[in-house]
Figure (cartoon, rainbow, N blue to C red):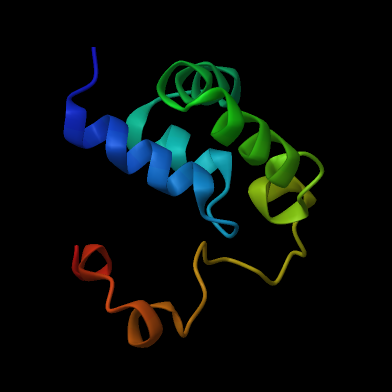
Length: 89
């Protein structure tokens, strides 16, 4: 059972375009199908449909579909733009 904080972080990572499912698996031990199940359970039906439409076919959500030279999961300008404190970890 995941804590509320871990669930929130997984949802946040799943919404991010540059975070592949492999990064979620490495950090939380959830496979892609488990992330999809969690998203379906935690999101409203409308948000679920938006997320599935957004993720479906997105190359950046799957490490094996990315260009070989991309080894990061977030934009290099993300922190200055958003002030994201999570990146300090």
